[in-house]
Image 1 (cartoon, helix red, strand yellow):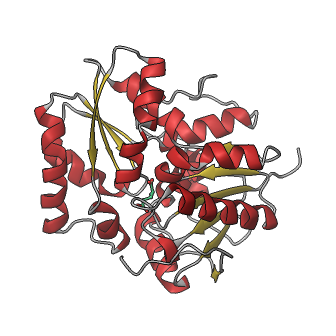
Image 2: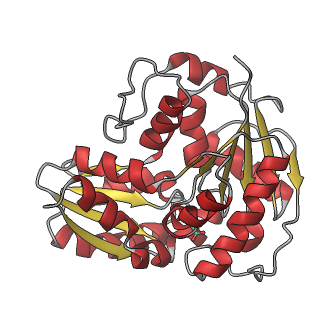
Image 3: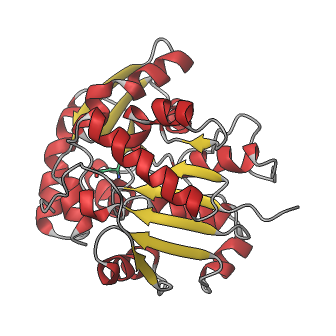
Length: 297
Ligand code: DGL
């Protein structure tokens, strides 16, 4: 079978939580990851900006030879993906929302799901719609969490301030008696230990990444033990693919190409911190867009 290259993007380092799952489930495929760090955060951008940025990124990833694309960004998935799919019908684009909704519905026992996400994702209603399509009776309680992305981008995963901020976002969800919290932004899984400390052992924490990559794997026709035909993952726990974990120790440039619109050294440091592996060389790229870059993070 011809080697397929997968493109993946996010506003910054958050999508690395999806890349991590990609390495576990598809250890043999090459990945091009683009971190649009010059424009992070996406979570308060207009739909027009998100479409412009998404369009430029799809073109860049196509230029890199990507035959499939994973939008490892819930905000883009919620807002710009339907438009990008129409513009680029020749390139399958996997998003976060449907797989994430399926994983949350599979995890909940009482039908009450808390959604933590960016302002744009919450406002779009995309997760609520996707969850209700699968489980019409489900109750979804949504909470925007604008302060978390800058904290994760700054690598402040274990700070006291991060815990306090997260507690304040989770409180309304816990008060609403949700039994499942959907991590609706790809930056949040890097805070899982803090989430767990706050919510205790009884709440399911759903990271859509396993379900997203299971869908990619299934659509690529690479079904293997652990994935089901509709792409539903077993909750948020990563499948135990030991061979994938073994290959993770040797991320070569053939296996992972890293691009950023921001600072190359910062992305390399973030990969090392978040994936626990030294990063291959990072290339700095520019996107031909008029959306203002942000120095907000
Ligand atoms: N990590 C992205 C998401 O999943 C974007 C966060 C942001 O840049 O605000 O929504």
